[in-house]
Amino acid sequence: MSYRLRTTVVLRILATVPLLMCPSLAAAQTSGLVAAYAFNETSGTTALDASGNGNNGVLTNGPLFVVGKNSNGVRLDGVNDYVNLSNPASLRLTGSMTLSAWINSSAFPVDDAAIISKRQSSETGYQLDTTIDRGPRTIGFKITNGSGNNVIRYGATAMQTNTWYHVAGVYDATNRTMAVYLNQTWS
Image 1 (cartoon, rainbow, N blue to C red):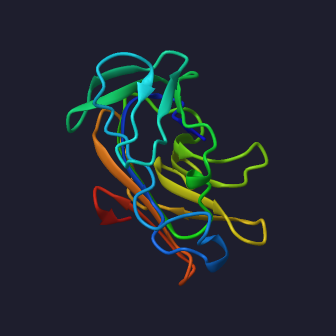
Image 2 (cartoon, rainbow, N blue to C red):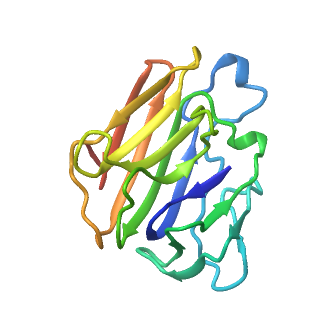
């Protein structure tokens, strides 16, 4: 799994949380916090997982630890930098989940900018991003449902460069609902 952003940004991942488990996945996943990245390191290439699950990330292609919104963050160059989390079983989320991060982009790419992504080249999986799919740059949350179809929720609030945003995507598998939040407000 890679956390990717195609624009220059300071990123701080707060949490990846499955809210309610599908019965068939209960043995493979546990409820509660599965990964959290404060990016409080000041050097090196390892981003420590604060959840206690050992899902440490590797800074790939040169991201830097820098001052962020609440302590440190990671600056990604917008070209090929990302934090690689590999593919641990605990991050293969298919049931209910919440993905959230603090972001601050100095520029936006022409297309989507992935923030948290477990999308395959076939566009299956899940992704929290900023997108222009519906016009102005907004938050987007994409998942693949049990039938293999993409389900997408878009925010309504236009985003600006050089502004801190807390972004979140929430999927409730029991009620089959998705929501996106910008600065803790349903968008």
